[in-house]
View (cartoon, helix red, strand yellow):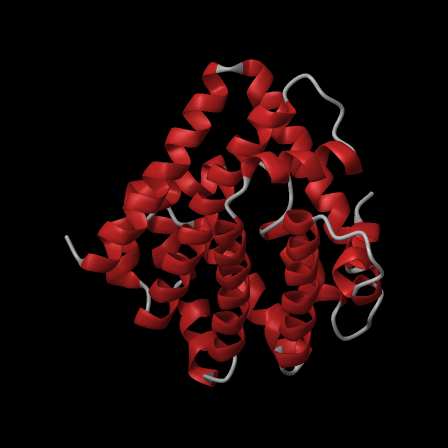
Length: 238
């Protein structure tokens, strides 16, 4: 099996394992769903200005729905796992690399959410308990990696928009992708491509996301109370 296919499958194995653990523990599963909803609310609050921006609203909504939302991506992930060899064979290498980054981000996020969920069992998720759960989870380096991978997905999509023939290739792939059982992945890539293309350059958008996410992470892990940008970032929590 190609290295790209094996790498993607290994990440999807982690995702499946996390989901199976949560399915076996109903309370944990419910807590993680509530956590994901809370994190989506947090994103909406942190990026309210971008969501209201004519230039950045669509990209912000794409991040909110595809990377931070509480949606159930089981169907898309099942497609990935079932036909990863076909994905690597059919899709251009640039798209395969983007999917590989997305798979790594997905696996890391599911792992962190499960750990956070265990610290939040039986508790109302609010600003205080969310901060405490991050403190108990620790893994500041994993949170930094999560941010880095999120930005990498954005940079990959932005880079792909500079290759005009790629959009045509994506359009031509609709039939083969559907036949191979990859319609959800195809839709994700097309939506991401069109969203970032319409933005006309993602450098500023991604810089804003990186700065705010890292400021919030610093505040969460260091619990700063003095008047600093990091401390102010905690005010973005619902």
